[in-house]
Amino acid sequence: MTVNDETHWTNKETRDAWNANAAFWDEKMGEGNDFVNLLQWPAILRLLDPKAGQYILDIATGNGLTSRRLASLGAQVEAFDFSSKLIKLAKAKPNPESRITFRILDATDESALLSLGEHTFDSALCNMGLFDMADIETLFHALPKLLKPGAIFVFTLTHPAFNNASCVHVAEERDDQGEIKTVFSVKISRYMSPHLLHGLAIRGQPKPQLYFERPLQYYFNLAFQSGFVLDGFEECAFPAGAAQKNPLSWGGNYSEIPPVVAVRCRLSAAS
Image 1 (cartoon, rainbow, N blue to C red):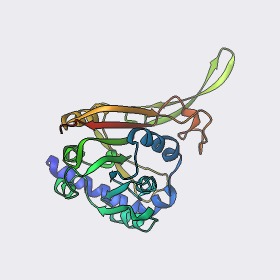
Image 2 (tube, rainbow, N blue to C red):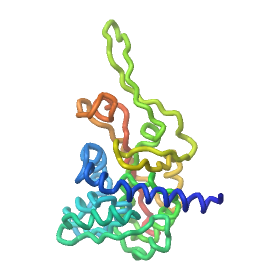
Image 3 (cartoon, rainbow, N blue to C red):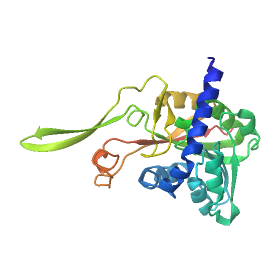
Image 4 (cartoon, rainbow, N blue to C red):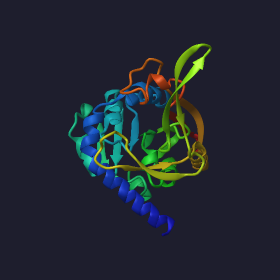
């Protein structure tokens, strides 16, 4: 099987999984869970700094929750996802002052991406989507053609070093100077080599999905090769005491381990 064949079939499997999980995901995620509200969105606001009147591209929008938040701030949003069922759910929700346009579009298809309009967007956002894409090189190569010179691209990820599909949550007891304490940690068995694994974004979802795990250097080098510079980076952890569904789920017990990263890349003004 060639690389292109593998990308085609893994992309198809990923799309099928998201279509199968769309209604379940929309019901559970709604307008945002703790990951969105405590980790992702605050970092997005700081790094993207969305303003009224800006034209923002929302990549892999899912049920459109980030698009609605951006539109409520006054931005004009072009949002797309390759899951037709997610886009149908997104279109059924409120659209603040009709500022959002939703499209079914595949981020691995460069010609489809460029049909959005070259040098059109003030900024682009991909919230927790890149690790669901069989091919991200196409998107990184297309973005400099879609963005205005000097524009920014912000993306968030599950932290590749601490929260990839091989991650195991651990609770251990230790004697800390005469006091028995529970220590929470994560165990990672793979990081450096890009690989893919099946996993569950939300427990109980109808169909497992593929996670395309890549180290941070993979993302950064793609950005650099595409003409971006890295000028913003945050590692996002839950505050101590934050609620969690069980002791081993992400939350306050893991306040020293960031499950999310947020990255800002900027094009040179001459791009």
